[in-house]
Image (cartoon, rainbow, N blue to C red):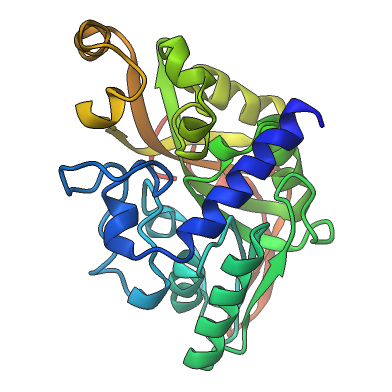
Length: 295
């Protein structure tokens, strides 16, 4: 078995376990995947409770941002959520896209798909569906999505370049994405980078912020902008599993930063905008440039 498939299997097993845990247990650990910290506070997740469309039963406490808040979803849009879990971001996206829109969640953990489908059925959401599959080989046709969102998932995928290429393929011309993820400034200690549990816990799989943004550009996206950024602090009682006290002190005083970022980018091309009055073709020139930072 190659290293890439081995890491995928580790993540799948870990997130199958997470699906059966409570939100409080997930929130007090590193993306829900590590042994809970004895300090019960949220390490990465943002608070969804005031977000319209939020369904508490679908929130497993696994995110590191609020991508749907920045995703510029319009009524009637087709939205795809990568790594949809129990459906949290899908249900928020449905509120924005309306009953005339469509939301598709993709996840490769069967029990997550089961939970998400059960939640959608309980809510009577006929325009939300969940598909089992890898996000680096999406079970979606070309040029299907107006908007793609994802919350703390790409860092779990060994081949991030492939995922970003898939996002480009699946988006319609003129479509866009808003993705929250974990990135680095500086190098993690080797003990953290090499540990499979920390990979499944979002941190060891993260790459440098500059490399992340360059990968997006290299795949043909434009108007790339960081919509939100926040630092992530890993509690010492989690770090102590991997580092000595001296190494923890050096790590906390060092130049390495772990950040949650929410990134926006457009796929070039003309986008069909549907209104009650007409359907017109507009280009991405209607969306302000990344320099103005309003996308």
